[in-house]
Image (cartoon, rainbow, N blue to C red; front, side, top):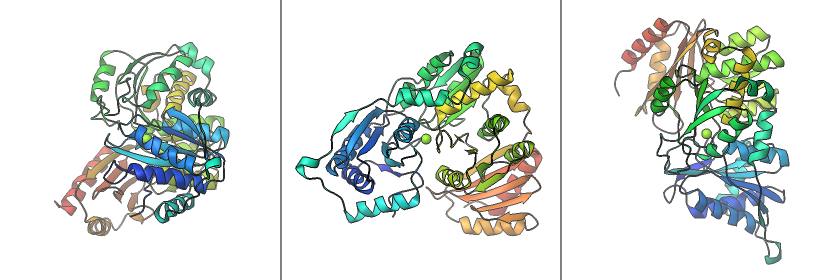
Length: 443
Ligand code: MG
């Protein structure tokens, strides 16, 4: 089993990841990078302080100095690494449940390291090949602040004065996570009056869990429906993502939110867009409007980041609402998304629900079929049933009919199959769903 998954090493303490692995991980990162300083930060999970101390000991023992940034969202350490041009280590399991934790390497430009870097670090861990410092060369640790530079960098992407004039009212759900240290101060800097919920740090994520889903944020939705806010926002556990509710408290589909951001960005500057096969054709309509291309990739933020680097794309995104602006940071950032949402509303002078309604109405339905290890057989049944549709296998199987599609993917983390159905026509989606369910039958 490789240690690194799609987004670092993840697992449960003393089951699949151990404090000893944390120490070895620190040693391996310290051995791999030639830099003298390595940034280190962690989220507020119950196991983060333990794992942070083990990783720190490994870094110091490899002879590297540690810049301890404390408990901050992932994008804050990423921006810090980019500004200082040093690598970093983040202890987090993003939106996974509270029993999970993990180790993430951050490259010197703040992005995810490439597969080559990861596999070299992995080999070093597995082969226990580490540089061990002599007594007079062991590293030192110092503290530094990542929050202020992070907020400053976010604000460079928006018109702070124009946003301040709007005197927005925002409801923010910090998910009991580290975003409580960054999003409320960001909103204050933007002159926003806000109400925060789940804004106490708690590594058990008791408020609503660490992943913002329509089910997990239903209390936020009813709050936003009963009190008028211009915008409501719910972060994930490590702050690289945010989902939004409009001024009526209706959830904004992530697929539409990223399209709105793309339209806003392309009005100022032209460049190609990088989106996975799971995003609807709405993004193609936005690209056509501005005379640019959409480069499609398999699903997964690290792949999108990689393609953005190679193609010099101007923006990437995912249908879950993740926005990537590579000139700022080649990775998602929920704090940036909040600032961009307010920037868009203030520049267009309309409520966010009307801005979303003005977009071509591409619907995207996501279905997860748990306990389906029979992906290959499901795939071939569907492929032969829809033999008239054009097929591509960039990631799973995508069958396209004009601007509608069926996408079938195997989950990377569990024996489940994911189905995405997208069209401007809801009946198309409903009938394809019924046909597919009938076709594949119960497990
Ligand atoms: Mg995350």
